[in-house]
Image (cartoon, rainbow, N blue to C red; front, side):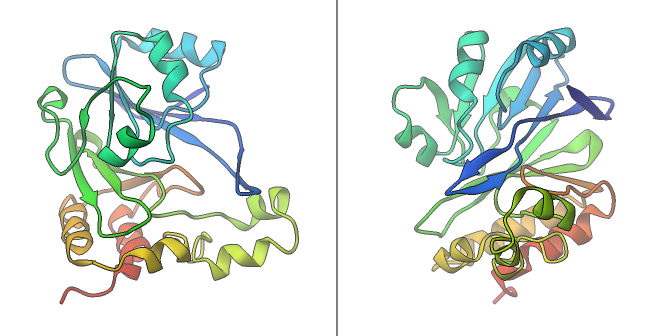
Amino acid sequence: MLERVDEALWLAEGEIVSFYGFPYPTRSVIIRLADDRLWVWSPVRLTEDLRRDVDRLGEVADLVSPNKLHHLGLPAWGSAYPSAKLWGPRSTIKRFPGLAFAGALEDATPPGWGPDIDQAWFRGSYMMDEIVFVHRPSRTAIVADLIQAFDEAFLRRHWSWWRRPLAKLGGISAAHPGAPSDWRRSFLRRKSARAARAKVLSWNCERVVIAHGDWAKSEGQAFLRRGLDWLGPEP
């Protein structure tokens, strides 16, 4: 169930879910922090097999929702690991008042994550904001919906013939990765988002894990530049 990417970083591939009728793959990231506790990003559906594999890695300490859409696994994971802290931007917390979050994520990283994790808060859209993370030891950026990259094989297997061209038109194909076109247009104020992009690019990442589509196993810096160039040049 788990794919080891680096000494302290694993991926868990989840099920395909429907997003307004469009099939989307799901992916979670699990990081072992310096204190040996586990940090889980965008939890996918928690199966018995996945829980067994996670329990072998250590104690789950943090469950992270990077934006208000990446929440499906939080209730089940929170029940399975009641001592874990739930985190998300304020937009996630507002949308799910029934979940007990430890705090709202912005630009500053919670102290318990130590030197392992840094983050950047993309805001300025009337639709949604997102927190992008980096695992410093492995130089791996972690992106939810700001960059999507569906390859042709996945589209042919899961998207109908009339939906497939929409991936390219919407700017979310592997050849032209990025945020969906409607979300791009919703960034009416881009100054803070461009500042967040500058912070992300300063990490000089080797890899970029994304939730939806092909992730970049190498040349991560170039992938981030290409995937975020829709924000436009610095003023």
